[in-house]
Image (cartoon, rainbow, N blue to C red; front, top):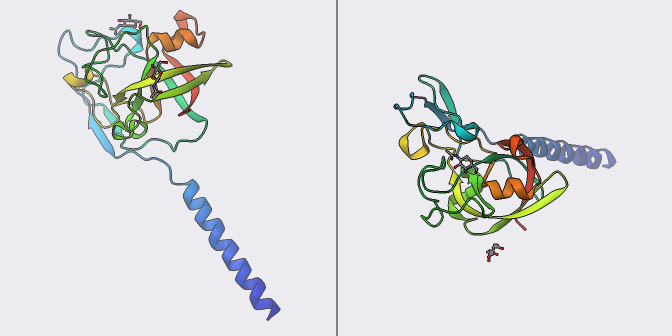
Length: 187
Ligand SMILES: *[C@@H]1O[C@H](CO)[C@@H](O)[C@H](O)[C@H]1NC(C)=O
Ligand SMILES: *[C@@H]1O[C@H](CO)[C@@H](O)[C@H](O)[C@H]1NC(C)=O
């Protein structure tokens, strides 16, 4: 009797461990690929380290992003939300253009969550500093390499694409703007 209880407990433990490791492995995988086309002449402004699609190159697309915690790791990139900037059309949340002097961001599709974080402020931290920035747009991880996306590849799934005001507030020297490991939280 004593034995069967401990075997039972052991089995529960094994099942629990298997379940936990399965949960840990539930990473966000690509949902497919996009085949790149060269931008038409004059399209895709490579300023600010923007990546332009290349003919025949395959780009991963994602409908998910890594799960959100109190300190979600992300890559901060630079975006212009102004008319004529490299952000493409107006912002997805309010169909407006925004001044790059306000701290605003676009989030990868999974984190954008169908607009669920629109006009909420998130706190972005790096360099021992923090800035509160408003979510106004989606950094589309599901599409790219077309006119709507300035002939740029789909967004990675872990991007906080930020106005220059965010970079300034984090104290990053202007020459280093473009790519930085950060964390963000929704409060
Ligand atoms: C590059 O970034 C700067 C600073 O945000 C901005 O003024 C400029 O318009 C951007 N260029 C493009 C093509 O978006
Ligand atoms: C986000 O921050 C801006 C600027 O501080 C503020 O005007 C706005 O009300 C805030 N939005 C929310 C939803 O708290």
